[in-house]
Structures are given as structure tokens and as C-alpha cells.
Amino acid sequence: MANILSEVSSPNMKDTYRWRELLALYCDSMIWKYRGKDRTPDEVVEQLKIFEVKAAKIGKKFKTKKSQSLLKEFIQLNYDIVSIKRFYELNQTAVYKILKKHDKRTHLLASEGFPKFARDETFFKDNIVRSLVYQISSRLLTVIPNPEEYYCPICREISYKPIRLDCGHLYCVRCLMKAKRLNIRDCPICRKPDVVYNANKNNLDVKLMHKMKAKFPREVKEKISESRNEKAKEESEHLLQMYGYGNPNQCAIM
Ligand SMILES: [Zn+2]
Ligand SMILES: [Zn+2]
Image (cartoon, rainbow, N blue to C red; front, side, top):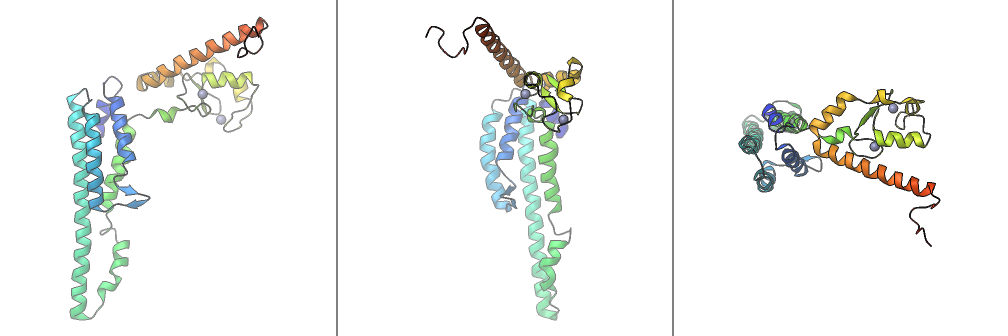
């Protein structure tokens, strides 16, 4: 499933951004857990139904049939996991009842130790359920590339073009140039001396730059136009200052 998902959400496919939106919705829905506690199977089903309705709206916009059928599979997978969860909980109750009955007849009080036993024994823990949910949330969700992983720590936007300092930290070229102008010499994160000062065009991470363009075309485009606007603004401010207009925000005539 993770493979199909990475295929339908790959950059040359049209549904990448819809899948990202969908999986963000999935995470926000807190289907399996709420405030750090596992939900009961009934609660999970309730949350899944709400998610299903919202997901269908995004699903309508899918461009490929594959994405549509994958969404169905994805939701079904969640319902299947609830069934397993329910089965485990029933099992646990059943064993407890059997032990109680046994106690009545034998006076051995085996059931007293049961709750602790149930907590400790891996068989009764809904380990399978947990690991399945974990697999969905970690594997499946990380298949969809997340631009936040490539954010510049200064401007909190995608680090395009990406400058990798000698300490290994990543910044966008715009923030790096600003830092240089402010005579900052050390890495703002790890404080390694002179890595900002020494950075030059060789610090451009070309491989990552191509990867970003392919994976996050929208964010990269936005960032390029933003940088361009900012540069134009800086240049006009610089020109105004050169011609003696001082603060460009002030009216030149007054
Ligand atoms: Zn930046
Ligand atoms: Zn650093």
C-alpha cells in the first residue's frame, strides 16, 4: 500500500497535493487516540465516519482512478483494524469471565491476578492493533513528502535555494545572504564558528535543490517569486537612498 501511495503521490502524478491534504486531515482527525489515550472501538468507528465524509470531498478532486481506489482501500484498512481491536478486547473480557467462573468453582482466585496479567502479557495487549496503527501513521504518512522537513530555520519556509553550511545545517540562500550582510559569522543553530562567513557558492546543495524542485514544485515557485519581490524592494530602497531620499517609506516631497 505504501508503494502504491508513493506512486500516486509522486511528483509527476497529479494528486500529490490532494494526498498531502488528505493525510493531514487524517492526522488531525485523531482517529485512534485522543489526548494521549486510545479510543474505544466504537469511538474509532465514529471518528472514521466523520473522516470518511470529509475525505470524500477531497477524493472527488482526485485526477486518477488509482488514487480513488486507494482512498477506499485506505479507509477500509482502518475499519479492518477496528475489527481486530474489537476482537482483542472481546477476547480479554471472555478470558476474564472464564477465570471468574473458574474461581467460583475452585476458590483459587485466579481472576484476581488477571487485570495485571492482561496488562503485562503481550498476548492480551492489543499489540497488533497498535503496531498496525503505528505503521499507518509512520510509514504511510512519511511516503508523502513533507516540505516542512526542508524548512529554513530562520524564515520557516522551504530552504530554496538550499545552502548547506560546513556544519551540516541548511538555510535558504536569502537568509544566508541577509546573515552575511548583518556580519553574522557563526551558524545560528550550532554556533560553529565562521561557517556563515566562509559559505560561498560551493555550499549550494545542488542535489537537494533538484529534489526540492521535483517534490515541492508549488512551494519552490512561491519561494522564488517571494525572493524576487524582496530583492526588487531592496534594490528600489537602495536606489532611493542613493539619490538622497532617505527612508523610502516617507513621502519624498514632504
Ligand atoms: Zn530562510
Ligand atoms: Zn550549524
